Length: 279
Image (cartoon, rainbow, N blue to C red; front, side, top):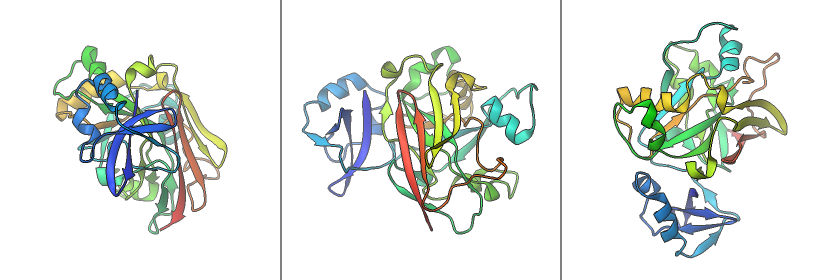
């Protein structure tokens, strides 16, 4: 099953995506309110609603009102190596976690601003995990039962602001720097994520490519770890990290700029595309 949130008639509306159409829920309803429930029953109910063509719709972030967006840093070995120079070394005992505000989220198809105060705007292809059933102290063995779905995410990073201090938050929370979508795909449609490919394509050139099996900390570990220090809630998002190939460490650097087109692909889950303009 696939769900999306769009702007329609001046309202945020979510719905079930099937083929080239979306069956919209009634006005005022929100996807987050259903994520800890029976999504198959929700899909059956939405199939009874009129279908709207997806052609020309305006997407919003899949979960535009996420309460907590937890991002994982340096979670692929090749990315850790390219940024820290650590090859064949041991890895940390715990994930690196930083926070994004929901106000930083953006949508598939949006033109995103290149901030006038940053000179190092970078891309990061990532898989986002959307929480369904919330909880605290979730065991790794139970963690996948708390997943409502998955979506592509681009963790756009203002590297100069990320490195201004010891905390990454400023470089990760500029407005419209976290495009997320276009759809949430439920786990039953995805199956085993291990062989799932993830890649980033900038102006037609593949700059990042890996597989979810190469995460240092896998999805059950991330859910369990995060639930130890926050209460996870339906609609919360865990952004699982980016593989090697980011732009600022390349020689010469390859960065985002006005006029460029950036695509994040996650096999079986979706294709997230954005263009850029000067702020």
